[in-house]
Image 1 (spheres, rainbow, N blue to C red):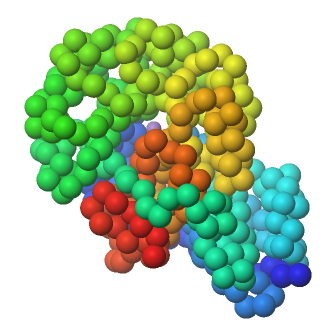
Image 2: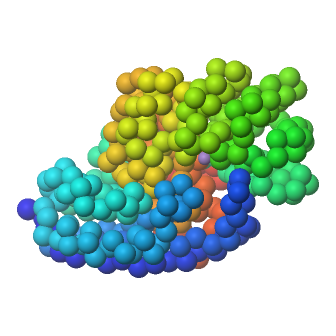
Length: 343
Ligand code: MN
């Protein structure tokens, strides 16, 4: 028996290097909740919750407001029987980002006791993953410059935020394409378009010979019919991001044939529910990508272990730590340009 002895929670503030501007949202700082789990035999595991108010309606204050309850539920529980511990957590705490951090810290503590890493425990499929890097919404000149810089830095996959102005977005994509030929593109509208606008955008780019690897969340999160419409009318694979936060969401999207990809983010769904949604997607031939909220390197580590362990993600969008000011990398991984390798 390895009991959970104590859990400490603290709020950490990170500043963005540049304002993080996506459809209808600009953030200059992120407030994450750090978790330190201590076991009865002295194992310490650190993890991070990065709550998203826009997507999940939670922030560091709401996470901290349920921290005591979570500690009370988990104290004294045996991490060797973590399935029970996860169930207790699920039935009593409704913060997805806190669940992600706590579930990861429990798995990591158990793995430390066993002398392995979490990614090995999950399957050990890949030793390293490739991430994209994001261009946020700005004026055309700055977005094109940023895209060209990301290419120069050595990234091969570019994520581009669009969704506030469809005609400007088409122009931006055309200009970015000129400067970054050879890169793959993930275009994320963050719910910004109507279904008709979304198809118009895709057809315009297609007619200019621009390929898009993933067309992420073009329409409103609740408009599953609209998402399906875009999927069948546009030439690019469509990903659901904001539309998938729960297992039920995933079941519904799959039944309605509304997407080609599901974007897994542990901060939307918790770690164990992410595993369930991944299984569901794989069984139904839905492709997978993995994304992030505003995690620092400590929080990104959690998704890196998931991605390396399972090796099932066609695209990894794990770059939030690169967009934040951080004194040092605390993720116990080596970042070599676009490649992330667990050390
Ligand atoms: Mn997204």
